[in-house]
Length: 195
Image (cartoon, rainbow, N blue to C red; front, side, top):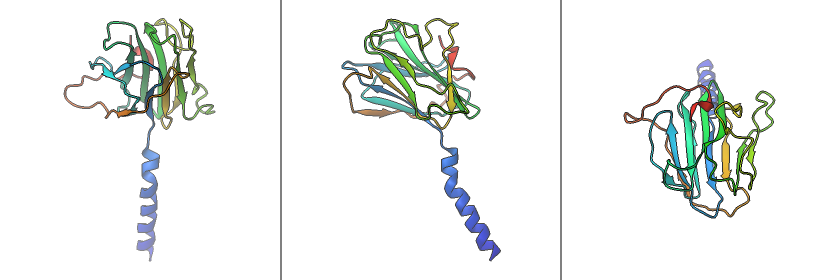
């Protein structure tokens, strides 16, 4: 009888294991009335721009590796680019918005919303709002020495809506985690290491 209890207990633990191991994801939604291009880039790894068709999601996949989701109104990284930056480390997700390389979305704004705001164990797990019509978003990095990094539990989903007051698109694109021999990755423990 004790063998049956042991097997039953193990089955219960295994049933809960996926929920314990689950981590959040980062999503970008194009709610603007124009095309947006994106490239998800690990530190010092190149990526080409792609059309953001409705939304784009990636699950947190590599601990200590900084990711920058670069966003532009043109299919190029050479012009103004806003960045959604994140680093998954030690059961936390560090995140920020950066307009150091320009702010092409000032007319429509941006809003980054965590799924678990007001978490008492992570008091900086808050919404990052860049209101439409403001040429400078004070909630984002505008200079390298600004302080704008927020921290949530790694169970938190982060959703960045471009032009939160604009019209919606519905096509979705999902990205697989960055892995493979052609990707050069470096550890980053703070989301503010991208320029």
